[in-house]
Image (cartoon, rainbow, N blue to C red; front, side, top):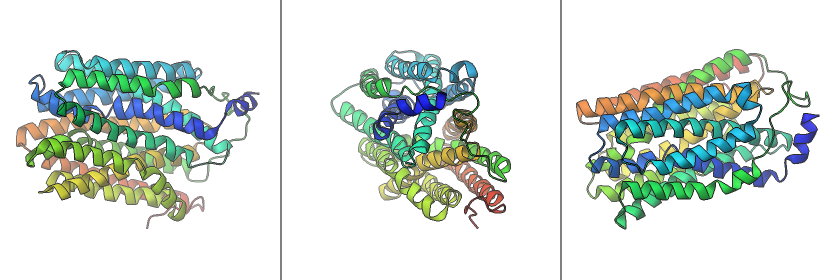
Length: 404
């Protein structure tokens, strides 16, 4: 039976989780988020404007949407190992190709490919690790996997800061990012080889959805879209926001490094909190703290406020991502890849709108204040929807999740 075959091929769950962390570090932290610390050298080269930067970023998120939609298709999901590896290859290649002087349109096309590849890697890596975590009763493996994004973000900050200090230009820095991504690809290429479960749930042991699951999932999916919009403007432009500070290059480094360092342990810490107060209350708290962080990053008048905003952003957006995916998976336990992909689609819709609108507003107004207030309002809506999802479940006695 498929389930028995998969169990024998699990191997060491910790090793698989570490390989998953490497996969998300290369596809998400580098393939998607390295663009943020790379913005200053790209803008300084004169080949990119703020509005153009927003378009390039939104193209990445449009690719993310396309990849998430494709990842739900049986053609791809039935052979997820092959398509996970394809995503890894495209992540590495599209990152290195950003070294080309391709202009806004060319860079947007490359970022679209990188976004699609990152969605395949996220969906299939998360699906594999969540399955292994459930079979071995080790839920914290998911937190370990998502810590790869935070560590990778910190690594991109270090690479750009050190490279710029050594006199490297934007193309050279992109090639360095590509080389690091290629090195990170080795572990997941060798270890993430778990075939997809059977069409009817593998060994048939999946639990029935709890009462209220359909309503809760719908609200959680919309909340996830709010997260995508609410975090992405700051996550894309924070290193540009700090340019108003003296010694801006150093603060660009520390702002993005703080996002990564805060993000690395955040999944573990929030998972522990979720175990005590319930996942939905934890997600609501993270939404509220992230709203404060977004406001501080845009409105703070000094480095302390901006670094505090960066820490709150990094310490929450990865955790909401992981907790939201985990919560959604428990609502539809027999279709993990499809559920993760639906959440990813919603998330990416928010992300597509955010950078293009944020860059346009910033270029017209001269600051990110209005765009950031819009992001704060969206995050508060996400918190309210998550609270409502938790109440839909707690009303039936399914989960201790009501935030109020």
